[in-house]
Image 1 (spheres, rainbow, N blue to C red):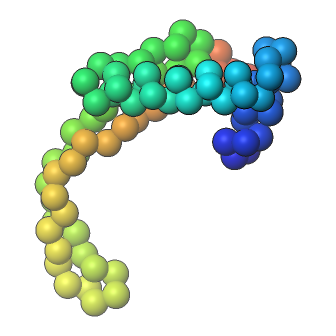
Image 2 (cartoon, rainbow, N blue to C red; image 1 turned 180 degrees about the vertical axis):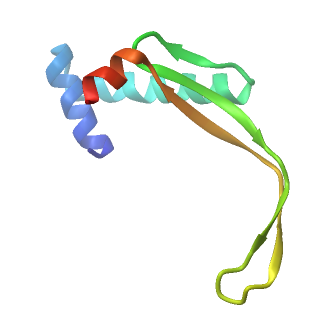
Image 3 (cartoon, rainbow, N blue to C red; image 1 turned 45 degrees about the vertical axis):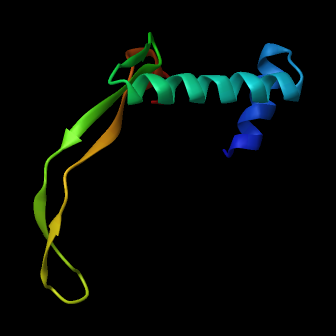
Length: 90
């Protein structure tokens, strides 16, 4: 499912126009992004939790040459699905 298909599904499920559904989805993405940038977690009970995790610097290998390379530290976004979402996917 791509963004346009998700907007269509939200509009149909919530009885909204596609324009309103797009605004709602964009607002959710913006609010989630801002919270994660600030170091907060975003928890949607039953759906899951978005959080930021620090990944430390490490050594890796270039698969083409086999030469050892240095991979710098960075922050990554993690998603842990909630029990309700996990149970409904089975």
